[in-house]
Amino acid sequence: MSVGFQLGGSLFTQRLVRICVTCIGQQGYRQLLPKSRLPTCALYTRSFGTDPKGEKGENENGSKTTDNLDPSPQTLTPMHTQGRGLFGKRRPLSPLERISRLLPQDSLAPELLALREEENPEVEQGEPDGVGVQKDHNTSAASVTETKTHSSQGEVESAEPQVHIGHDTVRPREEKEEGTVIDNTVLEPNGCPILSEVTNYSLEEGYVTPMTPTLLPGEHLLTFGELLLAEYRKKGRVEFRKMFQLQDGQRLQSSWGTIGHSDIVGRHAGDFIRTIHGTPILIRRPNLEEYVLYMKRGPAIAYPKDASMMLMMMDVTEGDCVLESGSGSGAMSLFLSRAVGSKGSVMSVEIREDHHRRAVLNYNRWCSSWILRRGEEWPDNVQFHNSDLQGASLLLAGRGFHSIALDMINPQLVLPTVTPHLHPGAVCAVYLANITQVIDLLEGLRCSALPLLCERIIEVQLRDWLLAPAIQKDGRFCRRKAPPSARNQEEGENNKSDEEKEYTSSPEPAPYGSVPYIARPHPEQASHTAFLVKLRKSQE
Image (cartoon, rainbow, N blue to C red; front, side, top):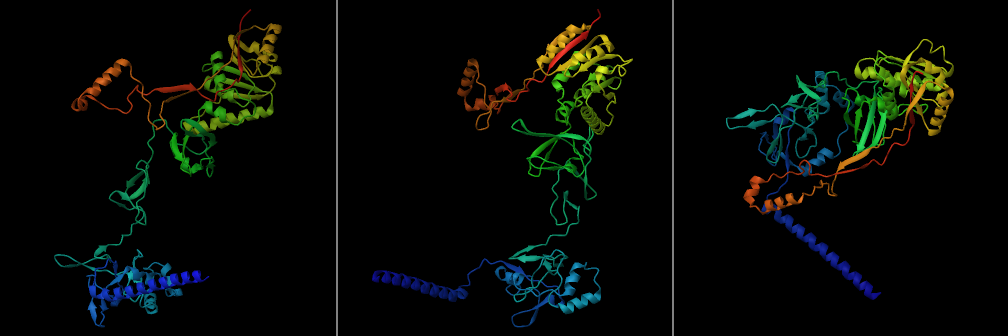
């Protein structure tokens, strides 16, 4: 215990001695400081006033002297002491001051200004900029007055206030009106430049006006009511794809952020628009193939790869009259409508009412969007009927068709009804999901003795591929290895002198044909969709 007490007492004594020595040294330094008059690096601010007494001040002796522009201890306030007035306790504002500060200065009556001066004789209203400094060492009111500048020819009175910091003079920033242009730079009301793309804005008469986007002949900007496709790719792979209709007040929702529909209107198709998180999203118009894949469905659709092959089988041209059985979701009806054109016609028959209603809605939705994107109407050449084709003899009475498309579970049941209305030598294309349906169809043809010849039974398969240049781990392109003859020539080039290399070599980072490519099948492949049967009508 005694050892612990002695050790604690010695530490306390040592700390007390150190504090005493430090205090004595500081007192000695303070006594020598006014004698040495060492230069200090403190910042000073010039004090100004707007009251009638502001032009003259009082010195230390009490006599009035004229305001001197040279920085001196009487007119300069250290920056470390200015905060006491600016951030210290201030006098509360009176109700008159609160109301008068909300009104413009020009709208105040002279009586109100006089009353305001009587109520607050020491503090005057500052400049509109809100720039103010201390009036003297003992006051904390902030005000700015006009000062005089010296020149070699004489004194010239300045029309704008100045602020002295040290020995430098700083002019307060001028007020800029909204849309003013200085040196081809558009400024906001606070004086900051407006950041805008040159292609989107033009300067006319000192204001910012949106430039009209340059449109090619036949091009139309995006408008409300159109069907659009949003797409985001990362490293060449599609991460997000969504079809939507442009509507006022709506937003495009995605895992990468949202985009307001109002931000898309007026843009070009194919522009990249960033979400609220900064992710660029490609906005473009979908083609008919993409619309069929992303539209609302009832039953399964005829996929574009199969529909295109059926059109080739039937040899559909402009002006043809085509019969379709099984409207489904309206995919095949749209492809047939485009193929026959405005001079042709398509009769689409569906036995189920819900499927019929869905096909009509999808068809009308595409037609309404087509008017907005192209400025012309889609050909109104499809007639939808909710009926059973097996007993629709009256519906087909007096009609002849250049080709027939059947998308049904049991097509062999309607063949006796539709075959008489098919032109001789024309083709009937049948869309079947599995091979057992194909067997039932051929068995029905064998038993019915119809004048139909089965020419082909095919399955359409598509295989997507990935093809990209070979890239190293550091991000640089891989280089092809030169053949032996080229290698020898390259070694000879390396043996040349530096002067010869300067004139003969032409270094290029990746010249044409020097980068190898890697090709492989896409990991996501389309599976089986349907079997297509081609039947041709022949005369016995």
